[in-house]
Image (tube, rainbow, N blue to C red; front, side, top):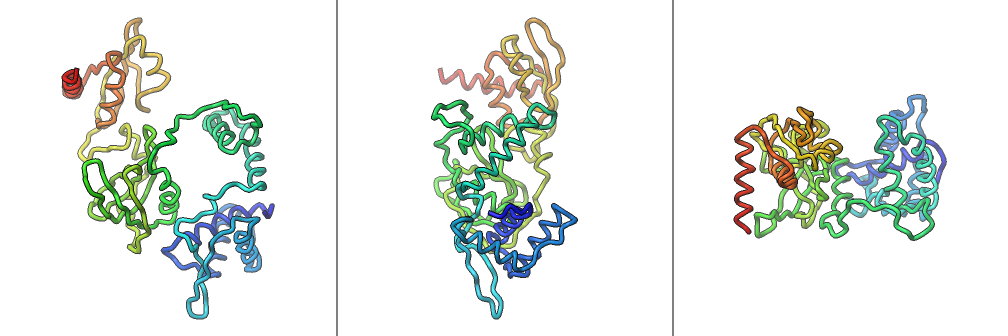
Length: 336
């Protein structure tokens, strides 16, 4: 693989272009896309010429590269390029030796940032990469375990859905909700993937509704590309979207409220070190109780979270939400 500092940028750009079935990429378009990506990274660069582009494509098709299933489709006197297999990506392929060495070097650089503010994520990323690719550990001993359900259904859709979001590709999805006995064939415009409670959810726009909805990946039966134009009318800033509630369900008419809770002295250390929500604030602390507040939109996931702490967590106010949880506890007692 070329050691040129722009090579990875070019390969990734070409991969996106080849995977985007919604647009025809002729050689001139590929050249423009590569040079635009390079310029965005390095404004001093002069870009590349067609000869380098052809070399890049040849490398990507080779065994030393990724053996990409590239199709050159004739269109009059010209031809456009695309992958023969839907949702193929070089990012789905196993690491070759050169890439493994590059990843190892990158991990060595990352270790320099451990412990620094704003780089806390490195503490989790490095062990995950090391466990996945076995870059440093020679023994078969399991050193670390992550919270992961290897039997989870639907994870095979994560990569193609990720690519569809990247390429703004409308999808035809066979989806069977828990409330339905048969699968529905829906046209869906994917915006965002989120993991919650060890399950994956796809956020986007259903063709039949004018609001943002989510689909559980374990209820998806199949996905195909759709020729319908991509609809971004319900696209939001997802970094802000999840700020006001817990989980993945945001009630359409939900209002942000302040909930005051009281934790027992046994639960208090866990609540303080792992807050229920980012808005959590301390109100009062004694030897018996830890009183705090959160500002959220109430939903099903919040109720489940509160109930999971049993007798160690009490809702102080508001009264209507307290009564709702009380009603659920009474219903639960009827099972025993």
